Length: 625
Image 1 (cartoon, rainbow, N blue to C red):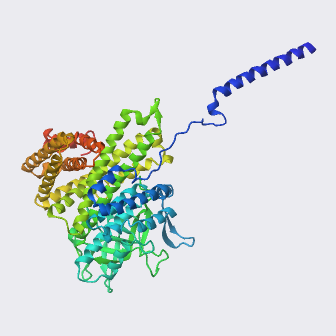
Image 2 (image 1 turned 120 degrees about the vertical axis):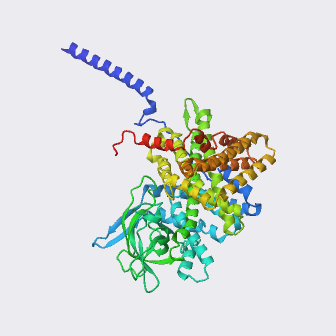
């Protein structure tokens, strides 16, 4: 009995020793996971950097286009603003994304209050926008014709970090432009509109106001002439009461808004259909007399939109039920008046597109210096660098075309622009908007991929770049709508805007040639050939009728953009202080098909047969009569 127990003790001790040895070996093998369920590896995240300090293109563009005495002041301000973006605004924008707006329609006692609740950071963005002069700089015109470049340079830095606050600023700028032009051209005094303009352009947070843009109704957005069913009834005090349903109103929490409506003849109840029946109205969103529990100006917020992206921005459906408004300009002039507003908001859209690309690319570049794969940093993988370089040239082209539009706007506003400048502004505005939006979506997708799996995870903050980018090709006109708008600009000017385009291309290419930079010679020749091919395309399609040009409208618009972007990139690369990167970027851009319209014409893409085949291809096996 004692012997058996002794053997049992020996066996147990041996078992414990074996377990101890095994435990020590396991502990040695798994030191990475000691006291941590997920292991010891962590990936260093990309740094939030000063966007101005790290953007050589922006700095060199400003230095090249702005006189030295102005550039020094502007550069210092942008450097300081970049620090504010780095240290404060970026985190605030992230909190706007994490805390989207909500709608409280009723209070505890059943009163309809329609309270749009936004986070504190969203409200702070308004104060920052005023203090930094993000609208004011465009109207105080401290730097004359360069003031718009200054203003949009700040917006370029601000937009991708603003938690979508750049959107209400775009509409605010558009409204300010409409009111300024009206006030300057009218001999009558408009005290209400004058006060509104001062608030829209104020650098004082206590008086600064934002504006909404209430155009889109249930039947659609682009065809406002036929889709607007909001009606205006004139009152004895010269105001109007509006009745209608606005299906998509961005910045629902704005202080005021511009909207379209049809004036009803009070004697017979009739109204004019189409474009001629549309008038523009100004309204304040709050009712100072607070006749309704909501405090709103006789409209209801039916709901906030559930959107793919831009979730930080309150976008609502509104029922106008006697909303008090003031007519802007002459009756039936609504479409003409909003044309200036559309110019500005489309420029904002282009700036936002270019800025979002630059911001994501900055994060991707920084990440490439911190992320290792297959034994070396991404920075040391040539294929990865090629991918980022291709993103870089897209963002550079977007930036240079967009800021050329900004430069033209600034010239024309101070009456220093020529007829050619006016033509180019009219042509380049829709081109910049439609093409940069497409670039932004593609670069956002590529940029997320450059982070691997981290780019797909919401808590990195990266997916919002792609979700938010998609609106850029939809808001203020889809790609096809703007392509047709480009054709309208050409037709309305009887081809003069095209003449100005080719004249500008030739003049600028000549200046590049005169610079004597041999590294650009081949690209200058490619661009010149592409411009000649596009001229031939225009002549050939013009002889076959309008249908061919309508079908080619998108490819034609792409060709115009790519050729002019090539010209601007070559011009920037030919500058005396240009970098080797500027030259390489220009040559890379010029290496693509600069005139896809010409290429597709050769492939018979715009014939009647092609139209029928397109329909058959799309509706193959579709159950339709």
